[in-house]
Image 1: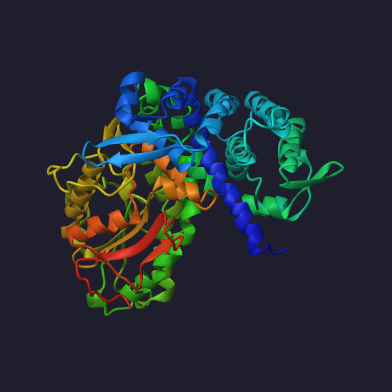
Image 2: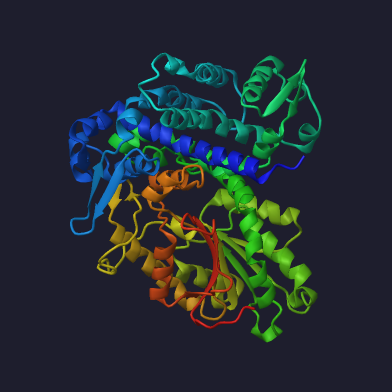
Length: 545
């Protein structure tokens, strides 16, 4: 049965609100637990600098947490470009929302408790803890006994957040372990077919049945249309869930050791993120954007062979999915694809993360595609160019440079000319190891970042799929229509730097890189756009059509 557009919109909104919940629950609870929200209630407003001093907080991450509340419509922010301080002010929803942040305690404790257990498996102890929270949620935490203390709107918002913390990691584990295989999707099944602890798994399925994701008939279960919708989009939860290692240490990030999450890793594993899960989630969630670049690729590799790039460099190759997609398009739909024997396509996958490189190598081998897979730092294209030339006789400028969702995740490099630009227009919250970075400094850093790449993209341009933030006030007016709150929090707490679409385009134009207007795409195609796809060239009139 095909879902109506109305149903799809309804379920998509629920998914986005689940993602909101994964980051809002720990952010709101930590601000409640330390007394900061009560302080705001008593004073009605306060500056970020004052709150930082009063609570001995790490200003950068505190700014991220407070901005989360703004994006959820529970607080207002005003950035003073003169003093570089931020003023936070209560609104009509603040008092009721703040008074019920205690409801997040159980799921925050669950996030922390789960640290001692496998991220991908269902284990008994965390399941029992999760099931106890579900029982409280199914009974509405008995808030119906005090109906005048909270509006239905705020109640539903908080309950949906809690639901998201329960279901998000559950969907990811089920997907990774094969529960969303077509066998289970297409037929009814019994719990023992999937998990050896049939009794516990049956209770889990009963919980999912409560949320109308399954139907139960006697001892068998079957997906509902709603369940299939979420099952097919399980990877959309993967990126946010992969940051649970950061979110479970939020108390320390805000008021203690700002490196608590990063430092919990070792030489084989990042501490702040489950990178393999992140790559899995990214590959699934981003695949739809890959198709948007096909027109550019087909046009470029249909040109006379002397006008074509020698190949492609995918900087930040992740799991190799983008590189595999590009090769498939070129091989099957272009002139170059018919001439690969005479003019082989040079493919290079580069990444800063060794786990991503290993996954890319494995996926390229499985796809029977030959490519160079090397370590590279997006913040140092000069070194990458030297390595390619010295080790493989490849000139970086002879390749089409592409990247997906990477420039915001560059290692922080302070700008050498921080006075440019002097006035920032972004509303983002940015930090480096807990210290707050001024928005003008972040814009200046992004300018210098692309300035480093300019010499290597003169010939064939720079193909970018990028993530963006949206002003909190606008996000709050459109809850359920965007995943920006989750992006802002996970990226803000892990020292990443997403800026608004207009800010991004403005900075690239200053570098001398201009988008191809007819190929430019943004998603959604509105003021809420959080993803853009385009090829940037140093020629305003370059032809890719």
